[in-house]
Length: 340
Length: 219
Image 1 (cartoon, each protein chain N blue to C red):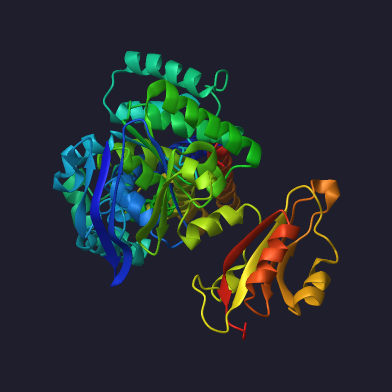
Image 2: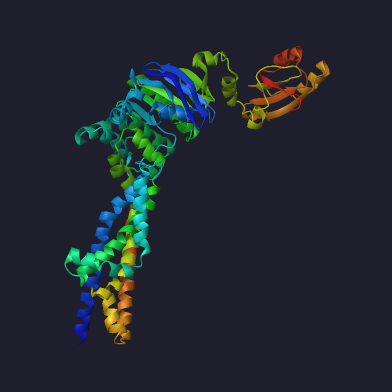
């Protein structure tokens, strides 16, 4: 359905994408996750033909995007429906008008346009909102218009660029449900580009992790749920849901242990509060001091989901084992040098 | 006598309106495409051919730099060529239009530039041609601003039309100069000014209403 081969793109010598290859099967929902600056936007722009890659190819339904001239490219672009973070709706047109735009671009006559708009409005659940303007709609409704517009040309692939990032949690859930429904009922392949693991976990079948222009992990969400992710970045995305490791700390933390390294641990508890004497006990038993780098203590009243990020003064295997027996969750995020 | 003066005022007001609206129509007819070209030829624009944008921009600024009273005189041979005469109301429409075209073009350009580039990119990615984007995105999205721009152009045309009396164009300006200034008829002068002020207020008011109507939904 979608195949990317050795895609590279650099801007002024700075590599945005370095030899990216992956493929997406028909009917699949694939999430591409990365921090800002990881190359997500460049990848997206290469996929829809807005950017010409330096090397490599993008195949859509077996056709090479880079080998097409402007006019054919327009036709090929129409095989991809785009959904945007900022919706990109015309303020001067109603819901109907905005959906109509996509059909006008395809050159569909007015009678058929009206018929198809009605179907699309039903599909995305916007009945009764037809004559409203974007300013009269909520964020979730605007994104529904965006999705209807993207589907207007019966695309093979729906490319969602941070489609839910501008929405509140409730609207996010409903939009993700809509996307899932579209995938199931219309069989449309969906590629989600996002920085939120939550979105991917809820919807995608497979996730690609993009870091500094490279795909560092390609894993099914099933395997992800079982904790089979290999790359530290993938794991850090999972941890994001629990606690965001502050950016200033992240740069001090390395993945590999080295001599004199202090382990950086994340302790979590789902049901019970973390024991208040935990760190004292740790010192008494092992003579190891722990420094708290970050804490997210919510207490029992709010579900008791506590998280602590701390470093131990020594990399002591038994101490870590002891800790893991005393808390519900323990993960070694990485290692930091003692001058942290 | 009273009636005669009343008739004089009516005629002059009509002549002014004729000049102002005829030149405004011409200004939009040529100025809007000019504004579109100025907008889309900018770097990163829809049709980024820098040289065209530069040349057009230069011509626009040049015309805008020449004071209207001088433009009026410089254009006499051109006016004679187009209208057949350099005198009268019809003749005044030529220099008024020439001054209004770049004026409107620059104001319209500002509105057009405010249309989100991301939106234009998005519609382009949907497979739209440039012409389609100009027709369906650029102009409709900028419409409230364009209407405001037209209002400003109309107001400045009203004041410029008063100067056209110099080439015997008739209109309220002519009335003020011949009766008010040269014959020291202060009452006449005040009346002319009042009518001009009234015209300006009416035009501005109508423009504001139309623009606000259009803007009601746009943000």
